Image 1 (cartoon, rainbow, N blue to C red):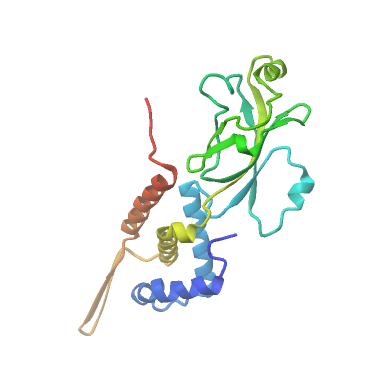
Image 2: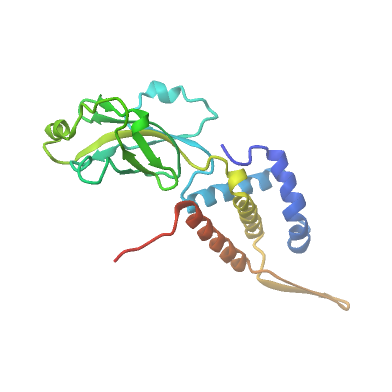
Length: 253
């Protein structure tokens, strides 16, 4: 799926908003087909998604061990990924941890389930009540806070029996939805950025020289283009968006 599912609409927008002046100035003799323009928009969208490390639409995350029959039943229009389970740490419930887990993908839109499954048997040991699961959606931080009625039969002692007091790999399986819930509404500058990235790709395809001139019988015309400056502007906006979505990056030495 894509943010630009209406092919005709985005192609028309690109022609009217972005490509009229660009085409006349830099490649007036080249005719761009609708497919060419649309494919560049999709390529720019995929590039931006990879560089920002976030899905631009809601994506279902299925943990390992999900039955193949369930995967096969996913509607074709639903975007999904599969990810490995998380490791069980003996300190999971101790001290101030409160079952702390940091999801691999963020932001988190919703948590469907969080359960313990012993990897060698693939049998569910325990599934937490949803009201116990508290999540910082922006950063993907999960905490388990018991509340209301209910018991935790799989306490730290029982899990230590299973794991011998050591880390048990691939034991915590989380099913959740990640990505931007409504990118067009919440990140209009992202849509604009993708369009600009698509224009740069179209310019790169023409293999234009950085500078050139035409002279004939008193007529002189010069042409210069340096997409490097445009790309630097895109890089700067990518970094700004990345910090807005994920928070400020830190490096500790």
